[in-house]
Structure formats: C-alpha cells, structure tokens
Length: 317
Image 1 (cartoon, helix red, strand yellow):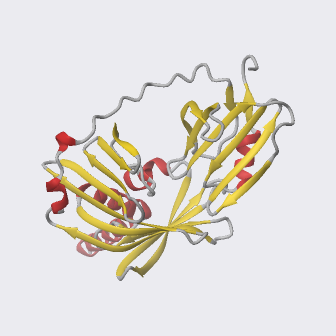
Image 2 (cartoon, one colour; image 1 turned 135 degrees about the vertical axis):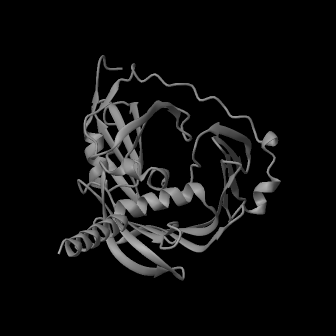
C-alpha cells in the first residue's frame, strides 16, 4: 500500500513540475536564456498598419564568453548596429559613426521583454494561449495584456524547440493588429556566424560618455501614469523644425516608450488635438502657459490622461 501511495505522489509531483515548466513565465525565461546564449541568425520584417514594412537581419553569438550582436536594416541606404559586450556601435548614412555603452541594441524589438521579462510583471499579465505553426515551425503563443487596460496588448509566438521569437503582434483595444514583427527565417548554429570573425573591435568607434542628468531642478511633474510605467529620462531637446529648446521626459514600462515634450507658449497660441498614425499617437494639449506633446504607441485616451496630469511645480517659468 505504501508503495502505491509513493508512486502516486511521484506522479503528482511530476505532473505539477511539468505544468510549471509549461507556464508563461517558464517560456519567457526560456526565451531570455536562448537570446543570450545561442548562436543564431534571424531575418524578420516589421510590418505597420499603414502598409509600411522594414526588413532586418539579426545575428547573435557568444565568443569566448562575450556576447556579440549585429542588426542590419536591409532596405534603403541601410543602418548597421554592432554590439560587442557592452560596446554598441551605430553606423548610419550621412551621420558619423558613434558608440555608446549599453548591454543591448536599441532596435525595433522591445529589449526588456526579450532580455528581462520579469520586469514587466507589474504592468502586464502573461497568458498561455496554445500551440500553432509560424514560419514553418511549431510555436507556443503567449498573450500579453495590460493590467489596467490603458495600453495596447501583444501576441507573442516562440519557437517550441529553441524558445526564440517567431512573431510579435501589437493589438489595439478592439483586438485588431496595429504592428507586427514576423520572422521569415531562423537558424540556430553550433558555431558563431562567420560575419563576427571579420569584426575588428579595435576599429569600432570610441564610446561617447553620456553625462548624468540632474532632474532635481525639473519644473514639471507628471501626476498619472499607467500601471508599471515610470520616468526613465529627463533632459532638454532641440525641436528640429523650430530649433527651440524644450523640456523632454521619456516614460517607459519596458514594452512601450513614451516621449513627453513641454514648453512655455503664449496663451491660446497652440491648438489641442491628436493624430494617430498606425500604432503611434501624437497628442498636443495646451494647459495654461504650457504646451504638452505626447508621442508614443499607446491609445489616444491614455496619452490624453498623461498630458492632463502634468503640473507645474515650484515657480512658474
């Protein structure tokens, strides 16, 4: 009798472990590990709701314990980004090459989702959906839902064998696609791509030093943000059309970045309104002497709520 109960207990424990290993968190952990540890080459296309698309080639490898990465925009004059460890070099047309210190490449894929998905748990719920077939490969689908319904949702498909991304859809509040990342080919190899053997680290541009920004003198305060969204940067930006310097705040929840521009204007000199372009919303609001502009991939009502919560603190400029 005791042996029967012991065997049953083992079966129950094995079943519970299997369910845990097939959870959304387990799949996200598998994805994050694969993206950091495997040698792979991925071709993908960023497809926008307005019909625009951008094809990319993404390479990654681990060489002598150091991550190396290459992202290339395949259409037009091109844009190349090369990362060696925490040294990221950018090569763009008509712009001198430059480099920064970062552990990630800044591209069309949300870095936090793929590198540190656990940081998104305050803002989003992750729901297992089921298995399907994407790009000719078996895939696990995971739905990503904003906890407070203030942001767009996502559908993520991961390769069942490797855990690497196969597809990522951004959906509006009605469940309609706004933007899509579609992988067209994926190759995992035992050895790094030969491309990396041709990179000469010594010839990469020197990393520029980004000074620490002091936000203690800020005259603006944002009193409402979606759940899990925080201020990550604050500085001054020069507007390209007018050359005017304006205050700039970047907000992020790890999946979505939102830009906030603030400037003092004459009363009644600007018009309130918003413009939607694919997944992007641009909203302008004049609140007293301040013109507030919100730009980001979020619903117009959320952009409006952020703008309306901005308050001048201290002495008015």
